[in-house]
Length: 265
Image (cartoon, rainbow, N blue to C red; front, side, top):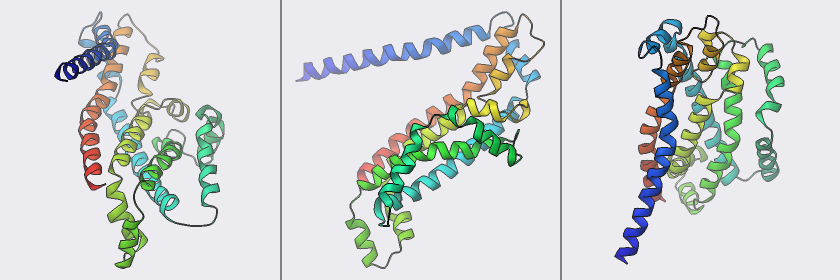
C-alpha cells in the first residue's frame, strides 16, 4: 500500500513539474526578450512613454466595480432562484442562462451604441456594465448550485426563530457558499482584468485604458525604434505582474474558503 502511494505521489509530482515548466517557459522567454538590445533600460523607457500607474488605477477601478456588482447580483439572484418560490422562476432562470450562448463579438456593436448614447466612450466605467452582465450569468449558475446543496431545514429553523429572508441570506446562506464565492471572485477578477475585445473597442485614449489593452496600444504607437521589441515585451511583463501577485494571494483565499465551506456544510 505504501509503495502504491509513493508511486502515485511521485507521478503526481512529475506531472506538476512538467506542467510548471510548460507554463513557465513562455514567461521566461518573454522576460528574456524584454531584455533584448536595451536591457533593463527597456523598462525605464516604458515608464517614460506610458503612464502605467494610471492604467493600473483604471484596471483596479474597473475590476473592483465589476467584482462588487457581480457578486452582489449573483448572490442575491442565486438565493432567490434557489430558495424562494415565485411564479415563472424556472422559465426566467432558463431565459437568463441562454445568455451564455451569445458570444461577446455578437454584442459589441449594440453595446457600443448604448455606451455612445450614454456618453461613456473613453470612460473606464463603460467597461463595467458589460463585464457585470457577462460575468453574472455564469456566477448566477455557479452560486445557485451551491445554494441548492444547502438544506432547506436551515431556512425553516431560522424562520421559526423569526428571521427574515434577508437575514437568512446574509447570516446563513452566504457564509455557507464561501467556496462558490471564492471561485466566482477569481473568475470575475480574471475576466474583468484580462478582457481585451471590449477594452480596445470602448477606449481609444491611452490614459483611460486598462492594463490588458495597454500592450496592444503600445505596439501600434508611432515612433518605433530598434528597441521596440524589447520595450513591448517589457510592457507585457509589467502588465503581468499584478496578475501574478493576485494568483499568489487568491490561492490561499480559495483554499481557506473551501475549507471553511466544508466545515460549515
